[in-house]
Length: 187
Image (tube, rainbow, N blue to C red; front, side, top):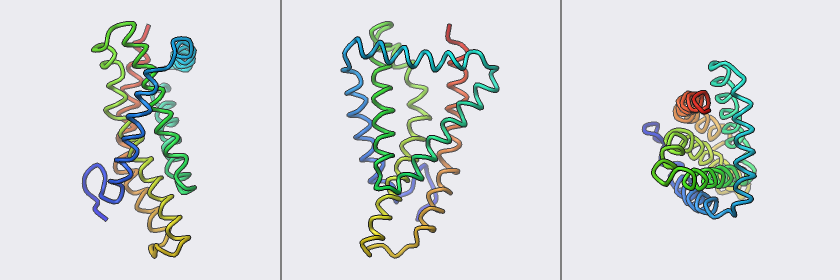
């Protein structure tokens, strides 16, 4: 198992599959009818509004804890045949597509890209890597149950969590800092 780079070749096929799911779900989110889009935007704004009452440090801490818990959940529960990682990537991409479409109608496509870009640079890659390890673990469980995998599940889990803390966690720290700044600057 290669330890260098953002991800090792262990998860390369899973990254590709999940990136395709992400892209198609994002695109689907851009086609949501206006009424549904407004309802989703109101929900997102209400969640962001909860953070505006907090100090900057607490906003950062809450966002980081929420994202760490969500991505750890994706890795751990990926062992259940990979359903959770696929759902997490698809639903996040769909929501981001909805936000992008709404932002593009309000301020144009180029400004909309700037609004969703901070999430795409750090948070989405973190989710894709975490989900890929979750999906990989799910496949390893199935292979082990079929007698086609000799590596102990514990070794696979240790590898996934070492990579999580080497790659995903630092990305989430940066993403939380950016998201905190955006939330505190929003009117």
